[in-house]
Image 1 (tube, rainbow, N blue to C red):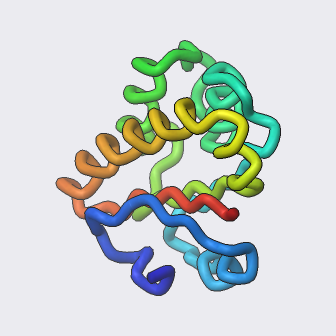
Image 2 (spheres, one colour):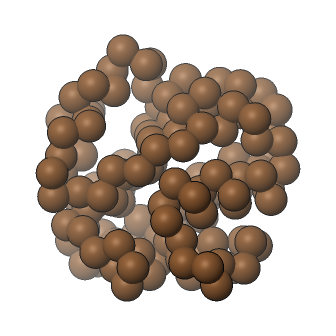
Length: 128
């Protein structure tokens, strides 16, 4: 599964154990970003984690529409051949705010469809 991260795929969201992550960190042509959702309880807290991890520009509006826009426009401030966001402490995050993280996954999948059209891998990994 993780060996296929360099490929554009409809499978853009992954759930893994901590011991499975070491193989994904060495993808030089990718922008590999990391954060933790262990303390996330609201959408605003999620936005802060994602914006910081993905180096969103200062104009990020901290709402779902702005998240959509930034996920689809990554190439403007962080050009790469592919994108990989790793979110740690996911079991705790999912237990505290399943609806927020569920909506984030939905948003991510929509963005990944756009990136697939450009043949750029766009993956989200939750480390449980």
